[in-house]
Amino acid sequence: MHWPRRLLRRLLTVPALIAAIPVAVLLLGATALVQLPLLLLGDRRARAVRLAAFLLLYLLVDACGLVAACVIGLRRPPVRAELDQRLLVRLLGVLHRGGARLFRLRLRVDPDPATRCGGGTGRPLLVLARHAGLGDSFLLVEQLAGQAGYRPRIVLKRLLRLDPCLDVLLGRSPACFVPPEHADRTLTAQRIGELAAGLGAGEALVLFPEGGKFTERRRARAIRSLRRNGERERAERAGRHPHVLPPRTAGALAALAAAPGADVVFAAHTGLDAMDSVRATWRALPLARPVRARWWRVPAHRVPAEPAAREAWLLAQWDRVDAWIAAERQAEGT
Image (tube, rainbow, N blue to C red):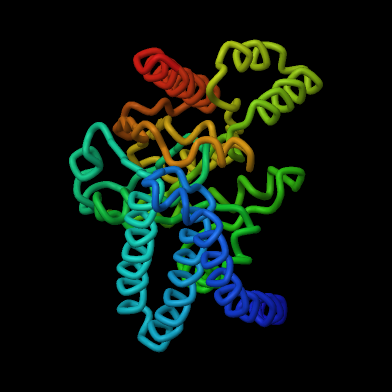
């Protein structure tokens, strides 16, 4: 039933990707010509050139990844899954290095993911991460898969199916493409629970409980929604946390219930937060400070078993995420 829709989507997105590459080449040439004086004077900003170069890099990586994914698709499933994992890590690594070169992206993770997550050979993980700024999800998955060696199962927006490489690569792996925010959350939570239920050793479910990237507007809207729904206590709690969105607990609780033997990793980060709009992204690049991330792991036996206690524990962990971000920002004077 899904094949006609999938085929139609790819008949549109793959040609669009191919057509976009020469456009990006022309854009890079035009911006380089316009900003040539800045480049000759050694002005490191040259934002237009940097953005155009990264756009071209992304499109080329996507196209090469799509071709490689199609070739890998000819292999048998056990071998294909391993090759898919290696390809994903390689593609994300290229983008990470490109971001480092063009935008001065520096990532500092405390503690080292390989140490914190057990090298990808241990118990299954539920990774609950903050979502803010451009590219944070790519960096998280790259660290989890590339550095810690875990095989990720990712919960991501259905909109990302418009990326041909992600559509093919993640579309045949355990993943959950969730519908827009206004869709049935009960059904979404059920699908997340089903994805978590199959977790095995060396696998990690990646989930962003906030349901979207952090912006001040989205935070204010979420607080108003809590008040309209009569959740005044949660609304007041969210009002005391200026750096995070109130978590949508249904999906995370469904995952916890479906995978009671999984350890839980919380991932907080700061440094990309300012890039919440086109104008803000333009001003923020290249990055003046490193992106800092903090991971902490809670063993499965320390996660409360009773649903109400589990939800309270989850909210308390999100309090900790906000507190860590506040402390990091205070330390750097922002």
